[in-house]
Image (tube, rainbow, N blue to C red; front, side, top):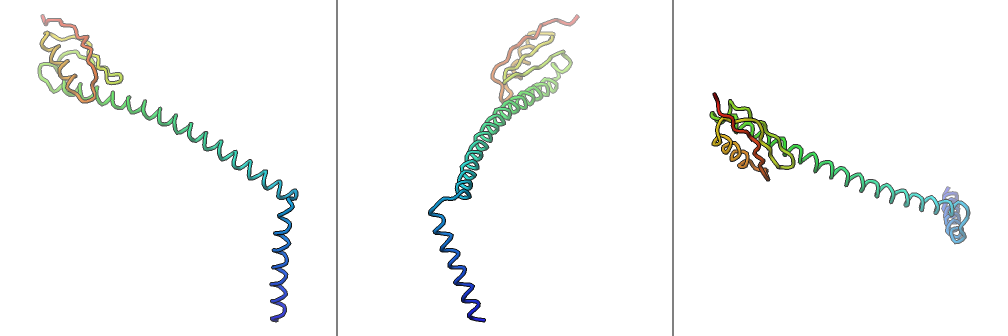
Length: 140
């Protein structure tokens, strides 16, 4: 029994040595393996480059979405402030925000209400500029 195990071990050692010796002379299988490795590396690089490009595009889209959300939030805050002001809430004031630039349009009954609406819009965080296109139309 011990002799059989010893022969098996010797056989495994002989196979390993002959396998190592064969590695000195690249055969078709080894050449094919190297080609496969090279191709896998190239594919990996291409996938990495494509993933980077996709990541950049997603970042750009996220930034655009962030601007849209910020603009919507600014518009909502301004409308809420105008509605909370008793002198302005009954007036026809529209609010539009694009990249932090707010445009007020519609009509108010006095210049002071126009100025108040502009001041309220300017006070909201994230507002870069206010275009006051409100028209003063006194009530009859």
